[in-house]
Amino acid sequence: MISNKPNKNNIINSFILLSFYIYLFTFIYKYQAGILQNSWLFFHDKTDRFGDTLKIIYSFSSIFSESELITLKVPESWIYKNPYNKPFTEGTTLVMSLPPLTIIFLVISAHFAKLIGVNYLFIFFILTGVLLVIFSKLFFKDFKYNKKIIFILFSFPLLFLLERANMMAAISGICLFLIFKKFWLGLDFNNLDILLFIIACSLRPNYLVFGLIFLFKDNLLLIIVNFLKIGFSYLAFNGILFFLAPLFLENYSFSNFILLIDYYANSNIRYDPWNSSLYNSIYNLYMYRFAEEFVLYRNLEYVIMFFYSSIILFSFFRSKLNKISQKSFLIISAAGCALMTSPFADYHLIIFIFLTLLLVSKTETKDFNNLNLVLLLIILLPKFHSYSPNINISNIINVITLNLLIFQNLKSNVETQKILLKFLKHS
Image (cartoon, rainbow, N blue to C red; front, side, top):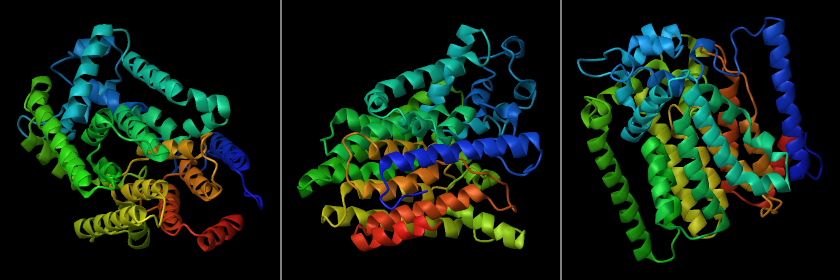
């Protein structure tokens, strides 16, 4: 897969070919020969396609009547067996587990879908069209430089995102990319960048870990000011959203949000195989070996969070001391964020698509990035997913690769590069 002197072009070519062969293998052996029935690349339930957004949109009984849902050709299971419109407790539904910004976005989208009134999928096509326009604006120059990067952009995480229609992951990912790009290029941040960061974290609070990139200042006073400014802005922004969200969804409140978050934290959704967290990998291996109740649970999750948070902080100080580059710090932060967030669904791997595109951009020419490129492309490859107690190949490969990324970027020296290159050549 890797030549003696690997370069971006042959690494990308290998990635494209391998992705093609995996999709072809899946088509032939799973859908034609009928084997691999307990493994999937994409979500196994076709009736739930685009469900992460559309299923919620059409669960709002205050917006859609049953007859309107039928007219829009909404799937019957979404009308009569939609878990999001069933009472959880008196006055609450599962939708209330979502952050207030997501609630506002989905309710507005629901009203828009009702206004259009053509077909239940039409709102998905509109949102996807807007997403593609944004991508064309962001990456047009890169496409002109190297047309093969379209295969990186439309690699498995983005295809899975579209298959699930998880537009919140797309919005938060794009907001982070705009910040990542400035940080990557060593440009100064402005108030708009802070707003983008706050939006991303309001949709995905685990992205708060990336707030450290705003603290790369030489002046201690500026570091403190930025920390307080971003922290206060985030709290104030979400405080306003929690005040506004009940105007969009009746009975939505901070207390009900916490109630539903706690429910999800104790549910089996964290064990979904489309998940690249370390916690899920340990659970999967435990169930494969013992096939009984998982006994570690919360304490293990906290240990994992503490471990990778410490690594991210350690890499921050190493970068401040010029022991590693700021780019290495960003890659370590992304890998650590994925590993310690349970669950970290595969559509959130879109942030690694953006990191990969930064690595292959025309402005990036440093040879050491070839190792990072190989590891990042391994994460972006399509892989088979299986429910426990079967071995979940995707999760195991991604967890190993994410940890290798951290190791490679924590010790950015010639000896480490030689070790990893030798390992990758013989794997």
